[in-house]
Amino acid sequence: MARTRLQIGDWWADPATNELGRAGETQRIEPKVMEVLMVLASRPGAVVSREELLSIVWPGVVVGDEALTQSIIKLRRALGDNPRLPAYIDTISKRGYRLIAPVRSIEDAGTAGADAAIIPQPQPPAQPRLRKFKLAAVVLVLLAAVAAYFQLSSRDSGQVAIGDLDAPGGWDSPRTNLVTVTVQPFEWLGAGEEHAYLARGIGADLVTELSRLSGLRLIGASSAKPDSPAKRNARYLVSGSVQRESGTLRVNVRLTDARTNEQLWSERYERPFRDLFTVQDEIVRSLVEKLTGKLTDAERQRLARRHTRSLEAYEYFLRGQALFMVRRTQDNEEARSNFRKALELDANFARAYASLAMTHAMDYRLRPSGDASPALARAFELAETARLIDPDIPEVHWAIGFVHLQSRRYDKAIESLRKALELDRSYADAYALMGGIYTYTGQPSKTIPLLRTAMRLNPDGGYLYFQILGRAYLFENDIEQALINLREASARNPEDLETRVYLAAALVAAGDRNGAEWEAEEIRALDAGFSMRKWFKTYPMASAEHKDRLSGLLAKMGL
View 1 (tube, rainbow, N blue to C red):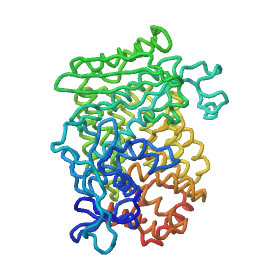
View 2: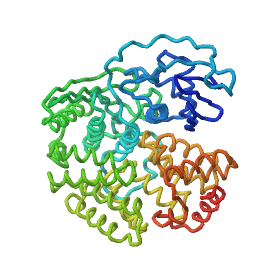
View 3: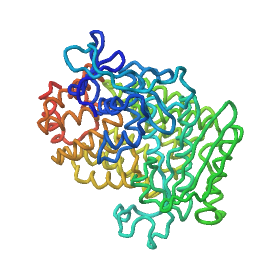
View 4: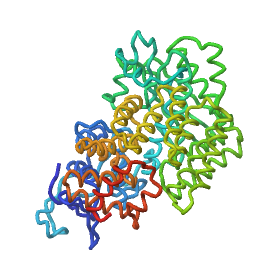
């Protein structure tokens, strides 16, 4: 990989300082983004696979595909490149990426525009071919989190015993007598990237429906990498693709034996889009018949009981979920608008009520005011409405726990999350949020095993899992592990302010002044008026000791 300055198209790139520049303009990019650019620049014109990029840029670290996708999108943004008519980075569908701009090695670092040896490269085609597009950066980050939010597994009654999930014998043992399945994120094949949330939503709801059936244990959605933890743990893999053209829906589904890689079943569905729910039901029936035999009458009734029968309401709900996870004021308001539209179409849509409640609770965090009680009271009212409509939905109790947390009712929040886990012992997000609460209340040692359980249940749980684990390690004074996890969280969602705050603090604790100053600049870029005193007003941390430690570390950076 090149470590010297390069001229790439109109830009020069300096990997030593992580800087790009042209015509008097200079900007810094993240180290991992620069590494991706250097790998591509080492082979200009050649296709570099996603798997190879991941192994080179993130060696020895299991990361989701969204980390690479985020880096490509940030790189395009920095270069001013248009993914539809690229001048720099070309996406090769199902293969990887290639750098199509001319590349020169700059021998004299002081003469960025000087002539130098041209690195040979094939000429790109004169006309860009049609290709399928990926989601924009923020949406991809969110959908990963949305997929984590939907991870549901078979329900068990009685008190939650977390230790049972770590009992000897694993997931697919005679003791459990369960068939283990992973549903991989469905691939979006349409040209309209604004609709790609539909593929994620279909895959996530498939997890929800399968998790309600006896004899199946769902292990969280996995990346497509062969060595992913979920692929090693699950007995069977479900994967698929979704395409929507005008009023036609096309869904391809495959069932694979994870141990032999043998394809056991596949089906293509091409129906009017209005038949989406019918298609989902047919997919579940076919999968269950292949995996565990015929459905029981009770399971047929459960399968027929969907949270909404309004297709339009369902679409608004999926859009809202994607927007909510951005954690920015404008996106939060747009998410709320989508949830309201869903409820206008189906006034008994409990999940939409629960999600609407969360936008009000988050509004308190995003737009702090002197009196937070109206927003939090409204959030709790909406969450309770969802519970009254359907008290058997784990996400509803998760939302109630989230609202309690923002209101600093920590015991009530834990109680709600335990209820969610009674309904679904494999609900990874419930373990993760519970772990976050223990750190807020000064008990980070309890957080770590809960987050490890969440990550095992849902290996692609998104940036929040790594952030919660990283801040727990910070307060446990394990700075090395704090940095590993917080850097991973930042790579998955570079625009999350909370992650940046903890990463800056961990870098100060590690004695990395340059790295901490970089993070401080990023914090100010995200929030020009940032101060710890203002931040703590709406941040639900109860531990005075942890507040003092975090403030003391960041004070050294002028924050």
